[in-house]
Length: 224
Image (cartoon, rainbow, N blue to C red):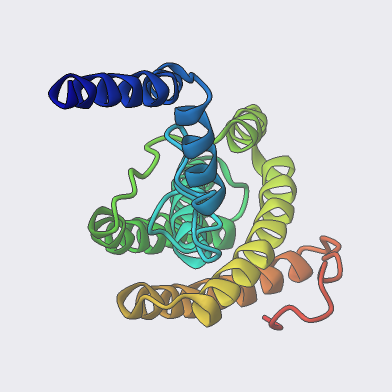
């Protein structure tokens, strides 16, 4: 009799415990609750979340600072401008009405070709593909100049060169003082000196021909 009671007691204990075990195994809310707690503890560890950019990566490209992006934009813009200066200079050497404008145009071709050549390896070293043609605005001005000759060409060309060189001088000065790339900085400072000399030259020719020279657009811009 005593030996029969032991299995019955054990069997009853199993029956008492079994509902709890079954509930624990079949309760579908247990895993989501634990998952939810993990997500609350690690809010940044979402499976589909994109990595946040560091504050200095303002360009939107991982690992690139805002200044590095400015350097690339400057190189592309200066290349476009340099191509235009060469093309316009070639027109001036051919179509200008006076020898001093022709001489200035030839100087633009020589200097800006050299400046473009110096900037290209720097652009290559930081992964910038430089444009090979003028932008649309410069192309439109080129077509306008192409239709002019003599004094009409001189007036349009000189006015355009005064405006462009003042703008270029500001941009080169700003880049030279802001870039952290020593190689680029040296090239831009050299370019700034060349553009400053060009600005003096074209303003002198324009004044001699009675062409009104507009005042500088920025009061804090470096004076030519």
